[in-house]
Length: 126
Image 1 (cartoon, rainbow, N blue to C red):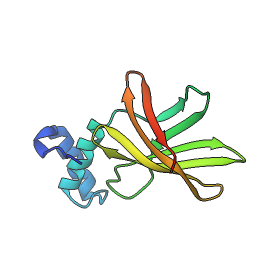
Image 2 (cartoon, one colour):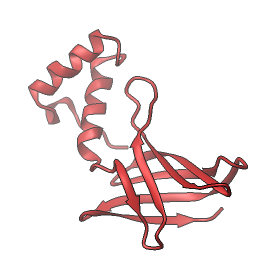
Image 3 (cartoon, rainbow, N blue to C red):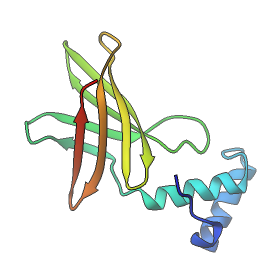
Image 4 (cartoon, rainbow, N blue to C red):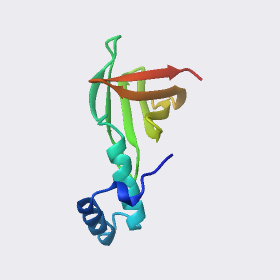
């Protein structure tokens, strides 16, 4: 993963993230700046989305530790499937292994990126 240098982040962001470091949200100013740069690079994926096949899924910030750079993918088709994934950045893409929480099985691998007003995604079964 390519991270931006501190020169890519505004002075206001440095002050904001320095405050988060002092509050214990990040372990270092460097971690805070890398997180800020990552956030700026990844288009807004959060929200509820609909597939061409009529399925629905949501993407939301992952509740995790300080400086977590991941998003949570959830697609419900109960009682058969409750699919989840931790989307991680890989250049301009987000990628994840998708698991069915109903039976704990790996369903496949997901790769996605923003394109226009939507999301372009690829799914590969294991």
